[in-house]
Length: 241
Image 1 (cartoon, one colour):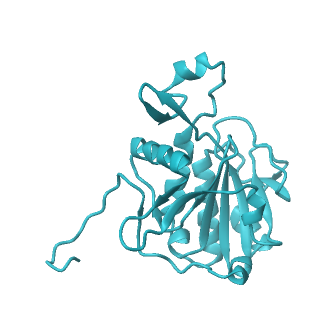
Image 2 (cartoon, helix red, strand yellow; image 1 turned 90 degrees about the vertical axis):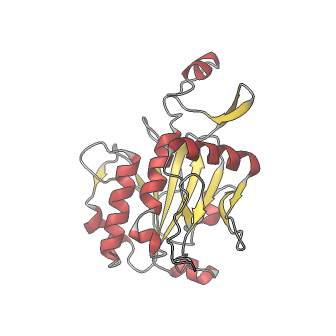
């Protein structure tokens, strides 16, 4: 409540920070603490000048531009990344300080998401934010803290992952199907766990830094649906509700 007794609302139009969860700070804590690290791979986040301004390219909004460039825009779907981020950052797992998210775009841009970030709910606002990020390379919180909420970081992603932790890929076409609630406790209970999710509409991601690929359902799922299953399973495993 504010000092005059009126509740302050928040603006969903921009990336904002909220009361921070307790996060691992030292290298030792990052390498040993319980947490899920999600890498959204192959994300269709790129900009193009449309008229007098830059916009986030989207298959649904910029079909003519993409076709004129002779490109297949099937995976130019930034809305998939938006849906995943909303699902992940809203989770109790994130609010408990046990989630870290990275985005690796199809154009090889690597983005680190501060767990304190509140992603805009409206897609158009999110798109504007991503344009700003891709051009300025970082987005900072407003106010005294001025913490960086989103920032472009150096590749490769493996330089930012805890040493020796399990790295799991997710794919509908994987040979091994698992129930995450049964599988994850066998893989990592008291250490970080890296899971890669393809932020794409069709096809498979081509990466070489995972140790095993698994299917998390007998049915094809959206990337956001996979993210939801992951956070639910980790919340069960670490008794977060």
